[in-house]
Length: 115
Length: 112
Picture 1 (cartoon, rainbow over the protein chains, first blue to last red):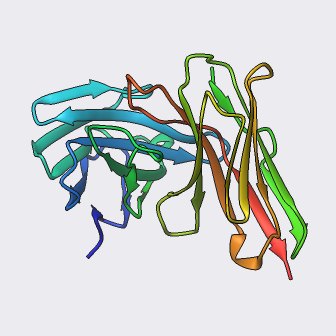
Picture 2 (picture 1 turned 90 degrees about the horizontal axis):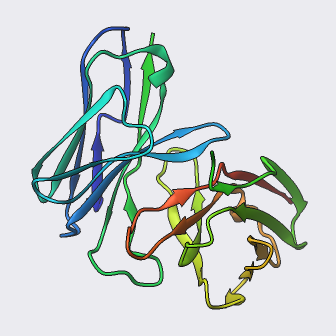
Picture 3 (picture 1 turned 180 degrees about the vertical axis):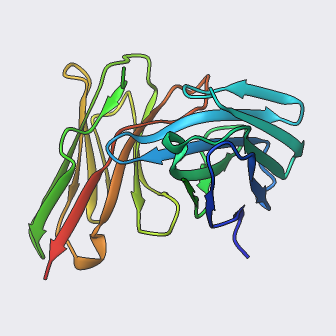
C-alpha cells in the first residue's frame, strides 16, 4: 500500500457542486499539506496542518477548506466548485524535524475537472 | 509573485549528454533547495538537495550547484538516460516554516 493515499484519483464535477478530496497516510508524520499543480505554475500550497487541530492557510486558500480528522487524515473541500479549480491536487506529509529532503512524501494526485 | 522560478518550461537532450536545469529564487531566507522529479500519474519524488551554506552537492549522476550571490541554482544530470524523462521541480524551504515553495517545473525529454 502507498504511504500517502489520495481518493479519488480522478473526478469530474459540475460548477457549483461541493466536492471533497481525501488523503490518508501511514507514515506517522504530523505534518500534512495540500498543493495544486497547474501548468507553468508548479505546485502551490493551498492549506497545511502541523498537527491535529492545527490548520493554516497557504498561498491560494480562497475557495477551499480543509479538515484534519486525525493525524493520518487530511481532507480538502471545494465548497462550490468553479472551472478555474480544474487542476491536479497533491497531498503531502512531512516529519516534524528536517533532514536532507525534509521528509516530504507525496500522494499520487487527484485530477479534478470542473465543468 | 513567484519566489522560485524555472524559466525553461522544457528541455530536450540526447541520451548520454548532459542535461542542465536552471532555477532562480528571490528570497534570501531560504535554507535548503531541493529538486523533485515527477512522472505522469505519480506524485513528485525527492531527487537531491543542497543546503544554503554549500555550493555543490553530488549524488551519482546528479549534481546541484548553488550560487547564492546570483540567487541561482542548477541541476546537472550526466549522462542523461531515457528514464530521466520527466518533469523536474525546483523547490526551496525555510527550516523554521517547513513549507516547500516550488518553481513551475521543467519538462525533460531524453532522446535515445
